[in-house]
Image 1 (cartoon, rainbow, N blue to C red):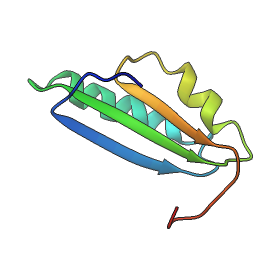
Image 2 (image 1 turned 90 degrees about the vertical axis):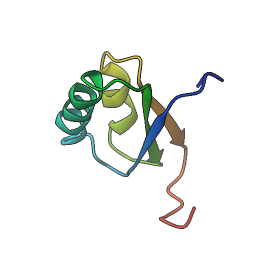
Image 3 (image 1 turned 135 degrees about the horizontal axis):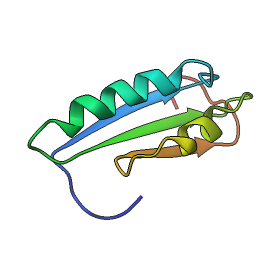
Image 4 (image 1 turned 180 degrees about the vertical axis):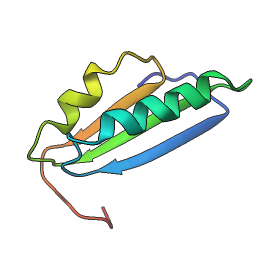
Length: 77
């Protein structure tokens, strides 16, 4: 993550979402591309045991970023 500011940050918590997260992120990215403000999408992978982080990293968008935790810590973390 860089230190540049943006107008809106969308934070998506994720746990074992490899199968369905691509379409969601592509739709969000497409909507944000048409807006006149800067934005970022932060996917927080809470220790997924599937390939959630890998799937997110394959999406070609400068606005989508991944934060990964090695172990599942639950909603409160």
